[in-house]
Image (cartoon, rainbow, N blue to C red; front, side, top):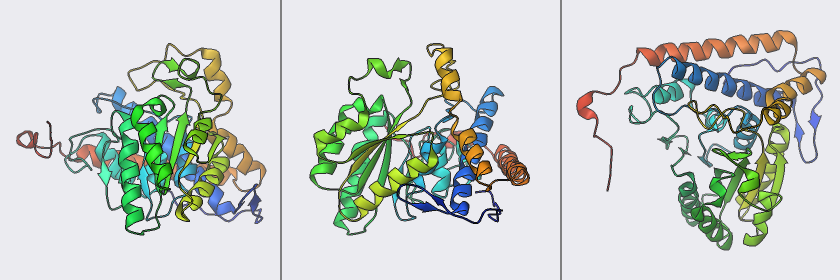
Length: 338
């Protein structure tokens, strides 16, 4: 994470409904959100330059959800993120260089060049990257929650799923098990309006995806996914409930996927007016204005942070591009198929 001075003209804390957030906490959110946006924009540029093959994904518009939710976790908690949750990886402690090596499929990357997206595991940070199809993540994450409960670890498992993936059968099965056994499990449903090209209006009839929680007998809440503080508050409450033995929760974060499904998709099926409306709710811009108005973020601090992020990412790109791809004779090592 970029190092940011937290000294401000305003020393007061920011009060919200359930928590008192200090300026340094708010600046931490802002720093990770900006780092996430710049990292993913860099990935898209590398893809356009032909330096990344396969899929390149963007969480543009989702930064507040990824950063706010993961910030509610402790070091010992488990994270099962989606491909649009790069901010969660960073908050949990993953380095920019490791992520760049992974995306550029280098031999020294987390999957030794076998994959170029978020399909990786880092047990040292308790990060278990997304499984495709995404719905299959939930039973695995619930299994980890069960194992943790049996070991009396007092940790929490946070798992993410999209609005489309939330309708997969494995998600339903996992939630039934998690609720019946009161497992320390928190599911974040990222409602970003489209499951690839299918709008939410054609996916389900409920007004809110969090309404499904009542069927499992667990808490469910819907939050503005472009407001990092509201996301953090909701997730902190759910995480602490789970840690104390209160069982699982569903948190629906309402956002907008501002780019296509992946770099190859120009999102022709999304009405331009819809994107323009959501652009006004850009999570980074709105939070930046808030920090400026509160006297927490000065123009000088904003510029300094931007320069530091740019330098860190450029350095990671330079290092990653200098590393070799895996040798051809090792292509089939650590790759399994039935």
